[in-house]
Length: 259
Image 1 (tube, one colour):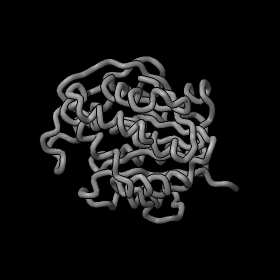
Image 2: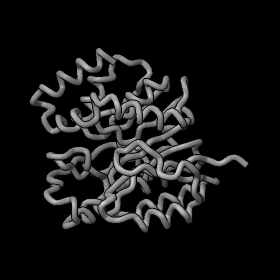
Image 3: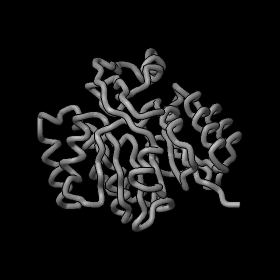
Image 4: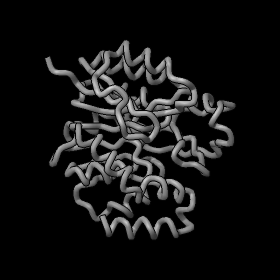
C-alpha cells in the first residue's frame, strides 16, 4: 500500500480535494483501525472473492477488501469522491470503479450534496429532513444537487457476478438499494442511523423476505460486532429501536443462514 499512501498524501495536499481532506485523514493511515476492519471483513471476504462497495466515499473499505485478497466493484456517484478513488486505486486491476448510484431501478437519481461534509451526501430527501434540527447534526447543510446515473444490485450481479459480501452505506437510501435486489446474498452490511430507524427496519424486513438471514451490528466506526451471534429479524429490530439517540449510526451485518 506504499504507492497508495503516496497518492493519498498528494490528495491531502491538493486544494482541489479540500472537501475530502478530513475523510482522507480519518479513513486512511490508522493501522489499528485497519487491523480491526480486516478482522471484521475477513469473516466474509476470502482471497479471490468478489465484494461490492456500494457508496465507497474515499474507498477505505476497498483497501480492506484488497488486503484480504478480494476483488472489488466500487460504486461512488459523487464526482470528486470518484476522482479520489480512481487516483488511489486506478492502477489496481482488482478494483473496478463505477461513478453511479445504486437504487430501486436503473435510470438517474438526484443527489443532495453536502459540500462541506461529502460523507453525508445522499439521494434521500427524507434523510436531509430527518437530520434537520436533530441533536448531533447541527450545522449540516445540503447546499446543492446533482443528477447522477443509477443502477441496481440485480444489474450489478448480472454484469459482474454474485458477491460474497456487499457493503451498503448510502446515507438513508439503503432501503431503496435493497428494493433493487431480488435474490439473497451470502452476506452484506447496511448502514443505519438513529435519526432514521425506520429505514433500518425496512431493510431488515426486506432481507427477511429474501432469505433466512441472521443479524449483528457494529456501532459507529468500531468495526466490532456487538453480539457475536446472529439475531433474528425481530430481535435486531427491537435492539435498533432501543438504542439511544446518541448511538448515532453503525452498520447491520447480515449473513444468510444455512439449513
